Structures are given as structure tokens and as C-alpha cells.
Image (cartoon, rainbow, N blue to C red; front, side):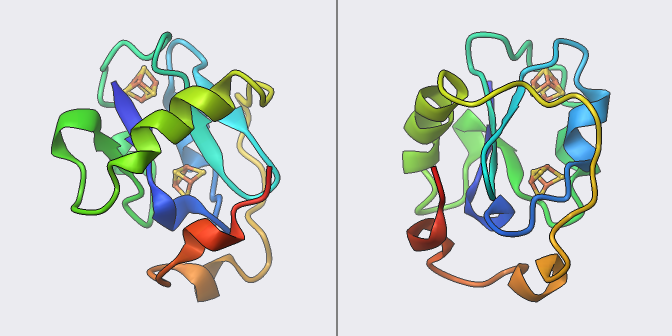
Length: 106
Ligand code: SF4
Ligand code: F3S
């Protein structure tokens, strides 16, 4: 399965959602997650993210392992998103910032 990682928090560009053939992206206030039960490993979303926040679960950057569980957990609570929407106005300022997990809204 593919996993949305920390860099998506407060960026949330949503380019990823339109290419998913099985609609497995779910949207929270400032982050998106992938439902691991629905993802078919098609790989289409990975290159769509302009800030490279999406990875296969077996090739996660160091320190991002907790996002496997977080995607599974939050996808059960958040609604599906299938249409791109505007990113937050300050999204560009948050690309690459550290410790964004502390800013995750549920
Ligand atoms: Fe959807 Fe494919 Fe990305 Fe999985 S890999 S989340 S099926 S676009
Ligand atoms: Fe997040 Fe990238 Fe999608 S910032 S919403 S994973 S396009």
C-alpha cells in the first residue's frame, strides 16, 4: 500500500486524489491519508504530489514509519475526497518544515 507522510500536513495540495482509480484518499482538516484496505498499489498518486509526500509503505523515508498506522487509523474516521481543491494559502511555506506531525488536526 501507499502512505501519505508528514510533509503533506499543512500543504494538502490534493493533486493526488484525482488519479486514484479506487478513491482511497480520505481528507482531514490539514492532511490526507490513504486507506490501506482499498489501495491497489497502482503507483499513480506518487508522482502527482508536488512535494513528494507519498511513498510505498516498504520504502518510507527514515522516521516516517508511524504514518503507516496513522493512515490506517484516520482513513476510518475521515471522509473520502475525489476532487482536487485549492491548497491552503500558505501551503508553499510549509513544504519541508520539520515536526509537522505536532500540527496535525484531527
Ligand atoms: Fe490510489 Fe493507486 Fe495511490 Fe493506491 S497507489 S492510493 S490505488 S492512486
Ligand atoms: Fe498531500 Fe501531496 Fe496529496 S501534499 S494532499 S499528498 S498532493
